[in-house]
Image 1: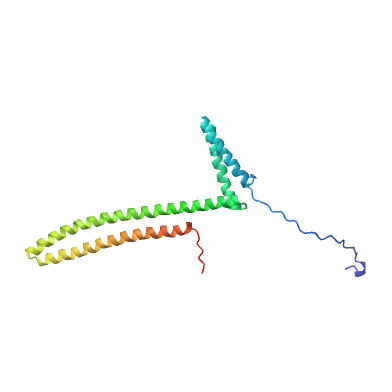
Image 2: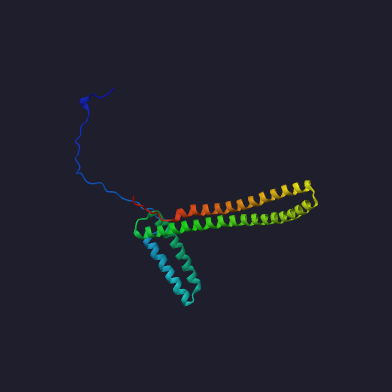
Length: 200
């Protein structure tokens, strides 16, 4: 059974002063490390100390500092690539993106041209072998024609046509392999070229 409406408790609402909300931005940190600029400065200091120690003859400590500098530089680039908060972050991230794009371009070019080179070499070898066979068939064709053997002449003539077609096919396949390598490298080159704005 519910209570009557007049028995309901009442209270006064306290008015609060209007204030603007406060925002807090949480930044991602790797293992709780310091911001990127401090990591970059620390990497530079380790590199400088490694060079000085190499000059002084303390190779073991210099190598350790050099390894630390490389690790800190990699950490800096990774954080700068993610944050891009300061100008230094943007420059480092842009340099990293460019170098990564050029590395991909180089790897694609090496892969494409080495594959095309192997294929073209095999096709040239095959074309030379067919050309030698064609020369033998041509010599035999001359002998058959001089002897008046029409059946052998026709057989050798058709064999020569077949060899000519196979030699031409080898040349076409070699051209297609080179064209494919050019196309793959040209496509990958577009990803590293800077965007150009053309005004209408």
